[in-house]
Image 1 (cartoon, helix red, strand yellow):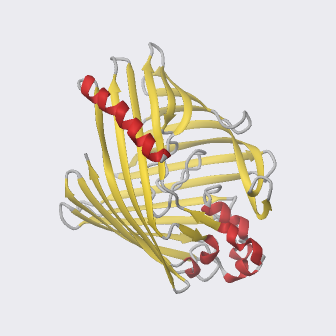
Image 2 (cartoon, one colour):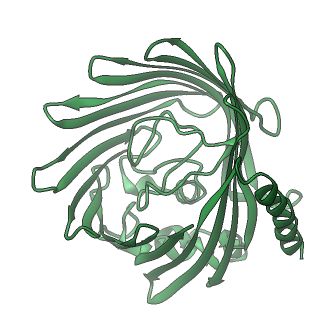
Image 3 (tube, helix red, strand yellow):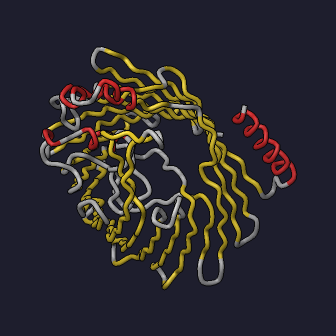
Length: 397
């Protein structure tokens, strides 16, 4: 009932705006229908999702812009997935029987405001206030300098959520911008402060960034009965890093690095190095290497906390060294075929991801991929994770 009332309220707000300010307000968006399936341990899991996204944008004056995104998502099928069904038997056997129902991830219908912000252009700086996109770094799959988002390696280009923030962009000189940002959390320790310098030298764009932000790890072996949550370990994280992107001899090159100084946990660093190239016959190839010293070099060291923190997006990986490769070729003007893979040097496991994109028209897209985990049980791409795929259709309006 709450969701229904919220939708009605939103429509009551949108319709008068559209009727009374058609020359100012733009309204667009998309409808997305998606099927996700996975086969593991002789069981088939399926999840069907319908998503409606409404985007609003209004240029209130030459210097003031308002934008917002509203999402409504409903789930069908198996809406409760037990993570233990995808872990190795060695890890599952060490969990007490009475705790095994605590590792279920529910998929509940969602109605939320993904972004809503106002941007004001002053004489010496631009100010953006509200829930907004914060996209950092040059990496395609992994972004060491991005402490706000973690991409899905199987679908790295999917849109990222908005974050509440106050942002100021200050042009220093042509081609150079200084950005400061504050993102409030539950407390000052959980809030984020950022400063970034972006510029261009010769054929390369670069950035230097410093961030301080709260980070909470959970201990998924201990459950807090009072809070009805796994035990939390909040701490402060300081990040210093930078990125580089450009072109050399027709090939695209990028690199990104970040060192994280932790208040309690061990310090760690992340590194990305990437290259891509498009041949004259339109075949596109790309490779991106990623190192994260928070990850481990031996899969026998992976424990329950490693896996749960990976699934809960508390860390980007549990394997130290990985490489992502992609080859893509347009079969027709409307149809593209690609094959990507991720190989872990640390535990010698591999996942293959054949993919297909089809543009039915200017406003209708279909995307599909399969994923095959080919590693031994217990590895980051172990066969115990199962094989599966995704089919997504999207209509823009």
